[in-house]
Amino acid sequence: MTEGVAFRDIVKRYGDTVAVNGVSFTVEAGSLVTLLGPSGCGKTTILRMLAGLENVTSGTISIAGRNVTTLSASERDVSMVFQSYALFPHMNVLENVCYGLRRSGITKAPAAERAREALRQVGLDGYDRRQPSELSGGQQQRVAVARALVLRPQVLLFDEPLSNLDARLRRQMREEIRDLQQRLGLTAVYVTHDQQEALAVSDRIIVMSRGRIEQDGLPRDLYERPATSFVANFMGESSQARATVKRLDGERIVVRLGDAAFTVDDSRAADGETTVAIRPETVAIQRGPASDGALAGTITKAAYVGTHMEYTIDTAAGALFAVCPRVDRPLAPGEAVALTLAPRGIIVVA
Image (cartoon, rainbow, N blue to C red):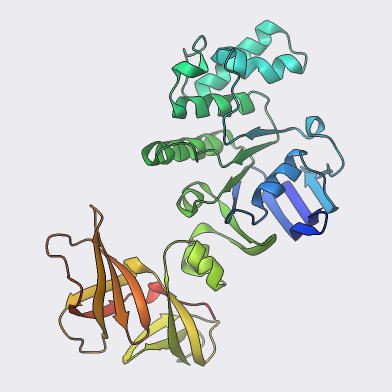
């Protein structure tokens, strides 16, 4: 593995407040790693320390094997795409993209040539003379990406880059960012609080909580095998339920919820009472009383959201949240139902 970025035992304090507490991770060159977590978890502080915009209290930061901990932002060979785009309103698109090059001493003609190439890479060929006010939000974000790319940095940083866009544009832009990163082989560190965005763009995800790393792994592993209840709740919807575990062998357990039992692949869980997280999309709902090992429930809430129904269901194991694609015959509050759970949707978290 070629090392792109390495954080080793990084601590950041603001007076008596510890914003980042002993964080260590690496980013392989040519990969995109996302720092994911709620507001205040330390992810943006980590990004700003990597960019040289915040000083490190202790620990070391390396880029391509070079210790950059004490170097200024201009000495680190990184570029950042900001949440606010930060385009100069009095400059046209080409001038905005050229700005960093001109500041570094590159003359006008070579700077303009590199800027036009960067605009082609983000699909804005021919937009040179437009003003930022003439562009859509998605186009402004592409200009911000081009302005970062044109500097040819060793590491490209994204700070909540899609939070100002509507849902459809966010989906489109995250696909474009991922395609660009893979096509150009960029080393990228991406910060977001949106788990769907993180799942869509990342080679690896680092989930942060209270200044520490809660879990670091592949997107599928974090969603399907979260190590803690915090990760299970943050990586998508889930319901917490009390259950009893009985191990069958080295790889399988039986999880009992009320009178229902389900066989689940899990090499870590110990026998006894525990808490499980249940993914709503893996709950199958049938009208009528439960039989044949199904979990009995009663609908307490029902909501139509266009593409599917959302239900809250009272069971012996606790209240479960479930989604159902069948919208033609919705269930009503008070109806008895039988629930079966896909084993992949039952996650032992405590």
